[in-house]
Image 1 (cartoon, rainbow, N blue to C red):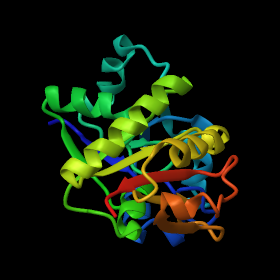
Image 2: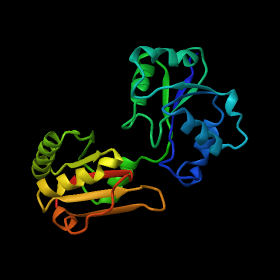
Image 3: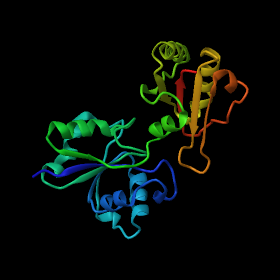
Image 4: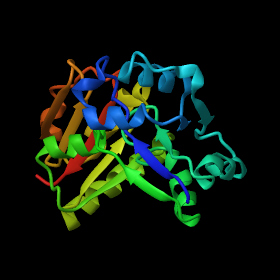
Length: 235
């Protein structure tokens, strides 16, 4: 009998996991002995916060991030194929969502391994919930192009899509590029289009505002190096 692959949510940076991680998830996670993690130090620290008495050195960790060759993934299923259960822990939030864990989850399905998602925080969904924008039709785009001309072209296209389909467009950026992205949005998108910026979700410094782009021009926030989710929607 094969084991179960648990998708274990991580915090979004909270020092106290009890603020966003259900107790039942904490109990289950700390009963496992095999983990596939995006960042070893982060995962070890997180598990120790879930259970200070946990013997971290007795656990087995596989490292899986955006640099992991596809050829190494199958070996991470060895314990699962032998009947032991394992957990995936991403650096923050939910495994498999804007996260390299999706590749291993796909491989688990291909090998008839049960995949069980656990409840926890997702900055993307929490931002959409708090935006007031269309939550019936939405698209998550991940990161927009890094090169400025390509990024501007995509923003103009997203503005066109919104006006035609009413579909909310959701995207993220590397925190140190947030200000450049904001400047391109307010310069090249329709002033009437609604823009939600969700900053530091679930932290004490959290800020979430939805205003027209015309309004944002006069209220530029401090975005530098702050985790952010951006949403564009119909006014």
